[in-house]
Length: 258
Ligand code: FPP
Image (cartoon, rainbow, N blue to C red; front, side, top):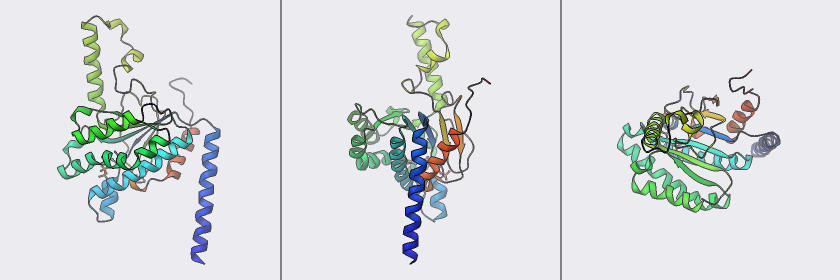
């Protein structure tokens, strides 16, 4: 009896979610969603597990949310997977995090190819271990002709360093006569950032109750809507993502106007 009730409830909540998905698809979805996936360590601690268990569980959530974002017709999903500051963590955790892209892509790349997802990355690729870089580069190569969702991993990414490097490259172009200082404006400067081929995020989600940006896309988030949740990333589910988009749909974006 209990099982039957559970089954009935499961079926019911699934159809509720699907109804919400349909509703969202009728309206315009945000084109670019960025996520700071936070709370893996706390999720593991609550279960007396090593921190890396939280990262591993978080990787499975990446798969679910990628699938849903693609289904919703979102154009770009940027995921903050490793910051330039994360190298300060214990070696065992860093090594584990550096193996996750391989495991994720080793398992899911064929499905991503089939689902027309294009894998991209922002961040300092040269500083990644060779095995991590190879996995990402292979995925980028195998999916380069796909035109569905862009799954953009921010890996060894730091926004301040990105901006400073952009300034340096702009100055270099000025010195060599390709640019001059009068051409420095917001649009031109955007082309010196790692996101030059992407639109700015429309919606930023951060999980785990922390209300800060942690050096993530500082330039690109200038007009983005923010949505914060206490849910820890490994507990983040499709209905949380849908909720974030529903809230986004009800916000009025004025971009500085009235
Ligand atoms: C922050 O949580 C999370 C990270 C630094 C890593 C995020 C990585 C994943 C979710 C997996 C990525 C998957 C792929 C495919 C690359 P935290 O460890 O700071 O959590 P805490 O604040 O609770 O300690």
